[in-house]
Length: 385
Image (cartoon, rainbow, N blue to C red):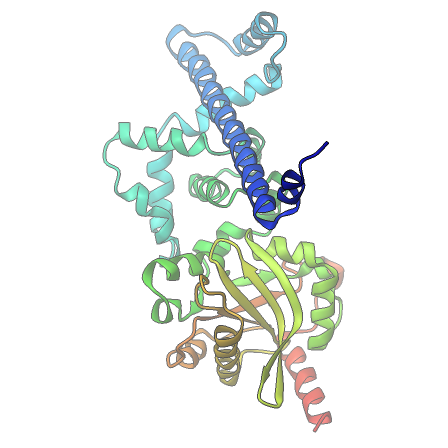
C-alpha cells in the first residue's frame, strides 16, 4: 500500500520543481556529451585531412590516395560512418582551406578593411601572437561547428574573411544548416561588415551590451520572401510578415522569440500598440519593431523612445536588459537618423528593408519605389484625417 506521505510528495510543487531540475540536468549532460563527440570527430577529420595533404606534399602521392584511405578506413572500422570517398575528399579540402597558407591572417586583414561594425569579431583574434597561437585558435573554432555546416561554408564561400565570419557566427549563435544557408543566401556577412548601421546603442547602453545589440541589428533586412509585387499599406506589410513569421525570424537572426503583434501598452486611459514585439534570448531584452512603408522621419524616433519607456516600466523583467527599438522603413538617410537619435536615452536602431534584392528582368520598373511607398502612406494618412 502506497504511503500517504509519498502520495502527497509526488503531487507537491517542490517535488515537481525538483524533477524538472533533474530533467534539465540530464538534458544538459546529454548535450555536453554530444558536443564532446562532435568536437573529437571534427579534430579527427582535421588530422586525417592534414595527414593526406602532408603526405602528398612530402612523398608526391597522387589524388588516388584519397580513395585508398577511404577504403582502408571503412574496412578497419566497418561500424563507423563518415569514411566514404566523398567525405574523405572533404576532409582533405577542410584542412587545405583552413590549415594551409595564411587563412586567418588573410581573413583578419580583409575584415579590418571593412567598417567598424566588424571590430567585435576581431577582438579575440587580434590579441593572439605567433602562428602557433593562431593555429590553436583556429582548431578550437572549427571544432565547435558541426561537419555539415563546415561543408556548406567551404562549398558556398571562397573569400577567407567571409568564411571566418560565418565560422564565428555559427559557433557563437549555434546556427543549424538551414539557418546558415538562409544567412548566406541573404548576404548576412556583406550586410554586417560593408553596410553602415545606424543606431545610438553606444550612447544608450553599456559598452559590452552595446556590442551585442550591434551584432543583433542589421543595416537592412531582405523581405523578398513576402513576394510583394505592388505597393502596400503598413498593416498589410505587418500581415504578410506574420503569415511568413518563420521566414521573418530567419531573416532577423538567431535568438529572436516572437511575443506578439499590435502589442498593447496602456497609460492612464490611453492605449498604444507596438507593431511587432520580440524577446531576444541572448540579449535578454525585449525588441520592439515599428514598421514604416515610407522613408525614415525624425518623429519616428520620438515615438519609439516613448514606447520603450513604457516597455521598460511595465513589462521589462527584473533580470532583463533595457528594451531595444528597431524602426524598419523603406529607406533612410544616415545623417538624419544620427541627429534624430542623438538625444534619445533608449537604444534605437533604424534599418531599411528590401522587398526584392535581385529583380528578374520582367519585374524591373514594376515594383514600387521608396517614394511611391511614401506617397501611398501620406495619402492614407491625409484620407484618415
